Amino acid sequence: MAATKMRWGDTLDDDDTLPPTTVTPPDAKGVKTITEYRKNDNGDIIKSVTRIRVSKVERKIYKVEHERRKWARFGAAKGQVAGDSVTVQAAEEIPLDRVQKKQTREEKKESDMKTVMQSSDKSAIVGSLKDMLYKRRMERQLAAARGGLAPEKPPEEDGEGGSLPTAGSKAGGYVPPSLRNRGAAGEGDSMRRREENSVRVTNLSEDTREDDLRELFSPFGSISRIYIAYDRETGENRGFAFVNFMYKDDAQRAIEKLDGYGYDNLILRVEWAQPRAERS
Amino acid sequence: MRPYLLKGHERPLTQLKFNREGDLLFSCAKDPHPTLWYSSDGQRVGTYIGHNGAVPSCDVSLDSSRLLTASQDSSAKLWDVETGECLHTFKFQAPCRAVAFSLGEQHAAISTDAFMAQPSLIHIVKLAEDPADQESEPEISFTCPKGRISRVAFTDGNTTLLAVSEDGYVRRYDVETGKMLQEEHIHEGYIQDMQMSTDGTHFVTASLDKTAKLVDAQTLEVLKTYVTERNANSAALSPIFDHVLIGGGQEASQVTTTSSRAGRFEARFFHKIYEEEFASCRGHFGPINATAFHPDGRSFVTGGEDGYVRLHHFDNDYFSARFF
Image 1 (cartoon, rainbow over the protein chains, first blue to last red):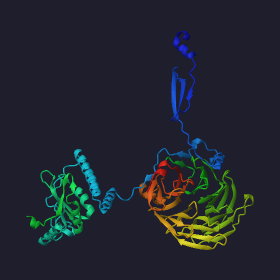
Image 2 (cartoon, rainbow over the protein chains, first blue to last red; image 1 turned 90 degrees about the horizontal axis):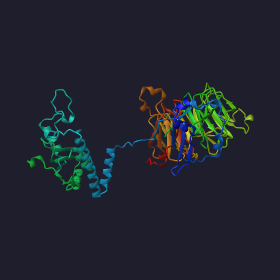
Image 3 (cartoon, one colour; image 1 turned 45 degrees about the vertical axis):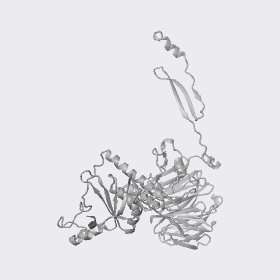
Image 4 (cartoon, helix red, strand yellow; image 1 turned 180 degrees about the vertical axis):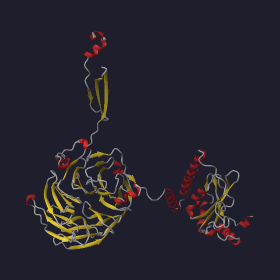
């Protein structure tokens, strides 16, 4: 007989009724615990614990609004059942996207700098410049460490030249108007332009780049050219650079503000560049 | 935000309207059945069956008992909001476009399009206490310069009526005599929508000339201009913040010729004073034709050319965030 084959433990279980379902009232955090017991197909008792967080949302509504909630459906909505999905809630979270200001971050930095420059508090200027340049350099070092940045190739000793097409380099090729007719006379002309409002910056640290200098000097006025002397072998700069300003008074202000300015634990020396002839 | 999508209409939406308390939402579309929804969860309460043409606009009475709809089937119907029963039909010779109740619901204004030899007209009808003895004949009808009248609104204690029209003009009429008191050319294109502020001192217009404008209701002077770079089909004013909600987008016929991003089908939020766009909310597949703010300012609704109504309840950060 099947009944005799059953083990005593099983029969004991059969007699045993399932423990009642218990529901604990919400605790301090509003968590309600429901403990249920049920049997599965194999006759094992399964205990399931459901924890529900109960929260109360209080909403004030108009009395008429409450009355109107009881309205009977009419028209096409009359025979409507829940499965009709006339109303569905979007599964996707739709954010209210902030519209970015037209001003880019670069522009913002620049305008911030300008406001700082206007206030004649030198410590503020120095502080913000330092932060900015330090951050720049750190970013670059990180990129270099990752191997993302190839060591910069030293450009031609003579700032220009390089990639710019020169007259006659290719017959019939496009030559910008500024480079046309570059004869002996033109050479001297451009040379003079290069030396106009030129500021010599010395005692630069080796890893200073053109961008750093641009950031450092651009608050004083528009810059026409920046030239950094690089070492051919190492690709590091040789500790001096020339910055040309469009206007002389901008250059004058830059010299006044930045001469003796501590940059990258070195003290910068900023002065008017000597004309080429005198230097040699 | 997880908006509710209300799929009650098969055709492009034309107007969305909340009742005074904001618990009911009325939607009109280019299909013949205006629909009533609960604004809290988007459940459909019912549809008003009886029209035979597109329904360009509707208005609901202050106590939410009556609904007035204008239809292109040349009629305007007065409905019982609760039961969906048609109480009265006003028949006209031309397609109807705009409707508005006067304050107190003694009168209503209904505009009809120019049709055959008839110019566009605004009709003022007197509403009877008991719909059974409602008269069909308007008290006064007055002609308007050419162009459809897209929206009308009673102002100045029901003595004057504002009407915005296809030719870009906003006009003020004397309700008693039908005389035009003032007209201002404020837009270069069809004015699609006009919505009054809660206090009635100013209103916002949306036009196909790609701008929405804030206009003083007394002087009809343009106070602010919101440049949208796409057609503006509808604009709504937030009742609690200095925010303007503008719906629009590239014209529906042009949609397939460009990428969907270029269409700008988002609901766009502009600052009322600074005239600057500060937020947007995507969702529709076509231009937005209708927008409305809940009277408590905590939710908004947009209706698109795609036939969907999207009901958004703002997240809490909308109320705490500093947008400017």
